Length: 233
Image (cartoon, rainbow, N blue to C red; front, side, top):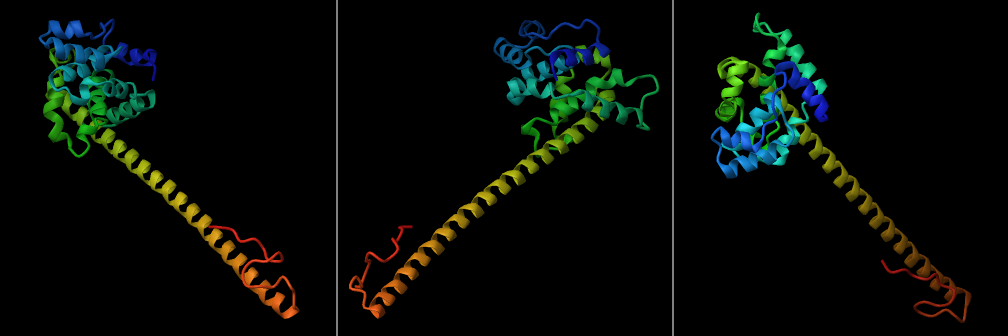
């Protein structure tokens, strides 16, 4: 998803929100080195999603402070957004006074977290502490306390984590299929060569016998001009 699409989603929630920069993070108490790493990770992200990733880049680090986190944020596509909108609007726990646009940042937070390979074998409860730290003062002021956002972040995390695991498994199966096909092909070539070599040796042996029976002067043990050339394996 390009930046225009991403900004489109952010505009639904925060009009005119500034880009999150290393300078802004530093001014909010994130150390210089951490702020530099956070700024590199965030790139051009803006709005709530930039605030969330930027906050985690500074206080948690690891995957969150790298380029992969920013790229993961851009995988929050229109189709993904639409699926979470349907989930929220069909949920019996939907808040009567809050639209999907109001809770979208919680879904974004959970979705991106689900793509973090460091969380691969961890359920939501095991990573909630990190996500809560990323739900900073700006997000609380504009989108409510973490406890209100948590159910939607958890739903998105669970869905995103399952999709990531499924994708990894599919890739493993695909890779195994390629390796099996290559092994079968290689075995086929080797078998064909063995059969061909055996055929040449058998033909030469029969030719030697025929030469002797016919009294062919060329007939002698080993290869003679009437034999088929043997091939090395």
